[in-house]
Each structure stands twice: as structure tokens, then as C-alpha cells.
Length: 278
Image (cartoon, rainbow, N blue to C red; front, side, top):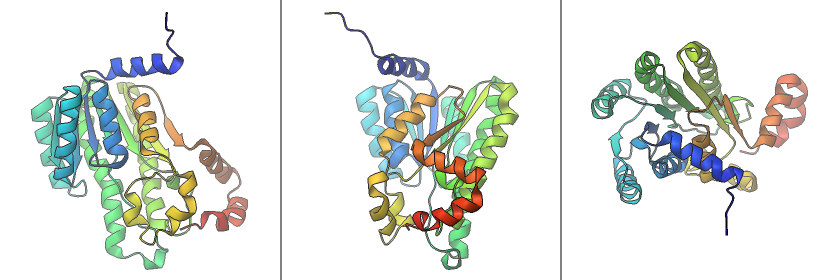
């Protein structure tokens, strides 16, 4: 019997072919969508550099991926908020792999509390990881990507960067900053054939909320809408080395951001109680 590949099957083959042998760096790779992206990239034959604060979890993932897919996987302990450490680790990465084809800036965290309850240390922490850390990692790969006229930077932002909600003022502000940086970067690199994509997911079922939502209220209220990390990771990997400007998940939530831009006053008046789920 002859089997005809579906559109999804052909697309999967294309992704595997274009990622095979590519050098991909993923921050925040010890769990959640970072680990899921790593698994999919390894299955496509990519060489990986995995970064996170938890070296133990990275080493376990490294062993599993090398055993399953026979690809090169390097791991480095890295706190992206430490810019000196970022410079040191990326120097070691370049010494090991030579160049980076794709950088996935996935490391990040949030704290969901009203603005007056968030401490200055928490504010600094969110911006140092979500914004400064992302920029520091990006700045390390930009010179060689521009020189080679090849590369892809993928920044994991959030729907919170498009729609600010109660009890996420600082987190939303940090993701607004990521989107502003990403959009500017895309235009700067357009003439160098370096691609830039922002990923704007809604809530994802990961351990992110162990810190962000200490009481579990938000998770309980939005559990039925939560995205699976495997689904988000697949969308990210499918976009690699394509001219995808943004990935917005779920689509219905992104429609809300469009309405917000067009009718902000109405949206805030009607949507305030709905959005206040934390």
C-alpha cells in the first residue's frame, strides 16, 4: 500500500532537514518549554547548547538526548542575570562549537502580586532575568550572526507583553520591554539575513507558576485554558529558520490584544474583572 504524507508530515520533514547539524543555544533549558524545545531539536539532528541555573537537570537531559538521538549536547550552568557570567559562558560556547545558528532566549520568571506588594528586589530580579539577561545573551551572538549573514534569534515573550493585567504590572512591563527590543532588533537585522521572532504564549502548564502564583489561585482559575508545553515547543521549532514574525498562542487570546489596541478604554472597563484572575 502506498502511503501519502500529510501536510504536517511534509512540514515535519522540512523542519528536520533544515535543523540537522545546526548549532542551537537554549536558555532556561532545564524544564518547561525550554526542555521540550531541546527534545524536538535533538530529534531533528541539531547540535545543542543548553543553559540554565540547574546544572544537574541539564546533565540529566543531556544524557537522555545523546542516548536517544546521537547528537552533540553541551551544557553550561548560567544565571542570565549575571552579565559577566553570560560573557564567560558564551566565550566557552564559541570555543566549543565555533558559531551559533539559533538562539532561543527562554529563561524568565514572574511574580504575580499587586504593584505595591512587589519588593524592589523582585522588580530588579524580573528585569535582570527577563530583559537584561535576554539582551546580554543576544548581544553575544549578534556580531557573528551579522558577519555570517545568517542566524535566528527567538525571544520567548508573553501575551502579558501585549495585554497588561492586574497583579502582573512588573512582569507585564518586563515582557513589554522584550517585545519592544525584539521588534527593533528585527528591523536592524533585516539587511543581514538574520531572523528575529517573538513568541507570545498565554499561560503554560509548567513550574513557572510555582513562583509566580504562590497561592495557586491563578492556575485554578485558568487551568482549562492552559497551553501544553509540548504544543508551544512544537510551534517554536516549526518556526526556526523561517521568516515568522510572531507566534501568538492561543489565537483567541491574541484577538484580545488586537481589540485592546483599538479600544483600550472599553477593553479595560469591561475586561478588568475577567482579567483579574490572579
